[in-house]
Image (cartoon, rainbow, N blue to C red):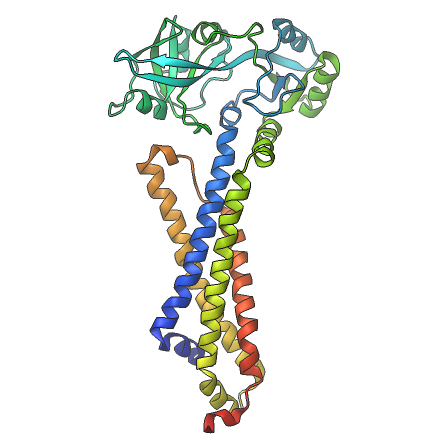
Length: 379
């Protein structure tokens, strides 16, 4: 009977293609927009995620997200270093400045100042050069995509020169950094050099990076730092989520993407539901013939569900494949869309949405078949 159900489904090619296409379109729209939303939220915390050396970020308690910096006095660093359980604590500078290329091109850049001695907070993945080269006077490491913005059409390479705050900076390395929320290039340099390249405020210390001693409970250490210094200490995961929550609650990004995802669900449900119902209505004579031959309602129900399951599986596969292909292609060909990907849990949620759409369409359609009078085949 399942074979008959599938032959009924594919017998009308136009409606079959319409059913599968409706599911595929809804899946692609929901998966693509949800994934872009996730990628944007991860970009807001890019500088936090890229620091892999530290267990804790220490900051002024009034800081809400990573871009809202309340500078700390230099004495705060020594107070944190004096807390029991701290293996090391280093300064971290984050600021904005304008870089000038030799041809006069101007570009606003992020300047991240890492510890002069340990270089804690340096980029985790170097493509060219070495992090140790930052110890040279005026040395900077530039992210790969940022180099393409500053020198469009040229291959990123060490040896190029920039001018920031009337000071000469030499690129000694190219790194792969996470894409920031704004598309400004990211420059890494030593803390002392950062204070020259990006004129600091009266209190230049943006954050303090802390590594716990081996075996130390990180949460307990965070509470101890807060109690003894009056500062806020957060794991990098907590600080990243704190930043993401700011953008979720203070911007219109979630609403805009939520509307698009909801429209994908509604359009998909409407198209698939209507088309599937028409399909069932147009096959009432066939269902009536089966009932006249003694086929039970339970078998008819399984036939309709098999048809719906086939449509859902094929449409979902096509839609999720197109969404994955979109991110694969654009991630390689468009630097502005780097870092966007299709999370597995987004694919799982979309699969649940497709099942819901198909169930609603099946329930709305099956009632006619179940209440059908077998005599309809003779009319």
